[in-house]
Length: 162
Image 1 (cartoon, rainbow, N blue to C red):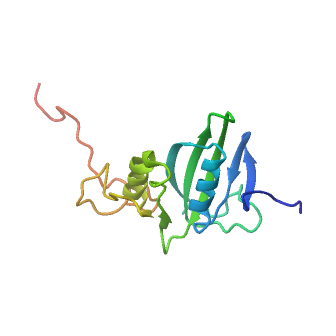
Image 2 (image 1 turned 90 degrees about the vertical axis):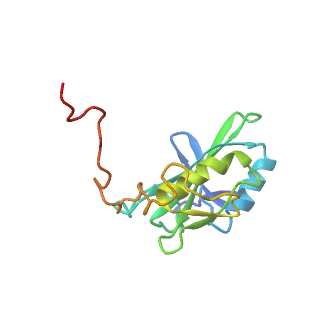
């Protein structure tokens, strides 16, 4: 097997012409700080993925353990005219990762959305509360094991006499 490339000590792959880095949760903040020094000053997005029904996915470098959840971050360097994607594996039994808020304050809302929809907590986040669902909502709607059809759909004027 060919050697895996690394950037800042983290395995690097390519997907659709884009650099993809695979830090562990422990390497995550240090990698983002190093990439910031390299000119990746814009955090475009933070999102989550639930691989419950697709545990044997491809695209992970040798040695990376696939977990149920993944936090995906896209960083941008205007100076280099380059994007880099981070894929952080997050175990089901401990869905927690460090917050990027101190390095990228604009990550505040996307991290809240991932928390709300997937139940992945971001340690160090200034206000980790629900952003899309009501505060008293139970569960996380984008998890693959969330009960389908639990929310009744109501259409305006449905059933009303004409």
